[in-house]
Image (cartoon, rainbow, N blue to C red):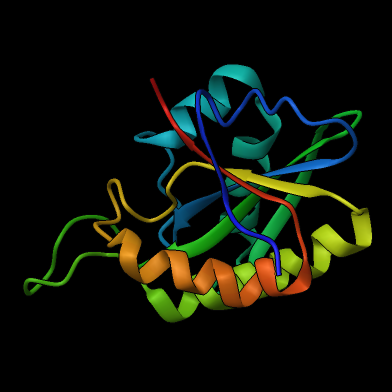
Length: 156
């Protein structure tokens, strides 16, 4: 089984060759404007446009689903619905760990089909309020178990 590759840098600038999927967590209410999505939108407009259209049509726009958008020749962005709204409600952060697992399992299928590596920040641990010690084992049992090369970026 592969191990997570931890890197310092920007997840929107993956250095690997071949197909790459940049994965991140989105909320399920159509909000796009804080956190890692700003870095994505700074580089490409397509993921935000696709996400907003997806929300507008409501087609499979529910926790646990993903949307993969090609942004360059060998680069894709995976919008993953794994955050219930925004902000803490009744002492619960908006992260939905079950949805994270569903999203990453679907991401694994896409990565295998595209023969792509996966690149992401520490998903779910910023505005979503999740804990890395919960997310990391989910990555292991969804991506690494399938020998998908996985890179986690800590922004400098």
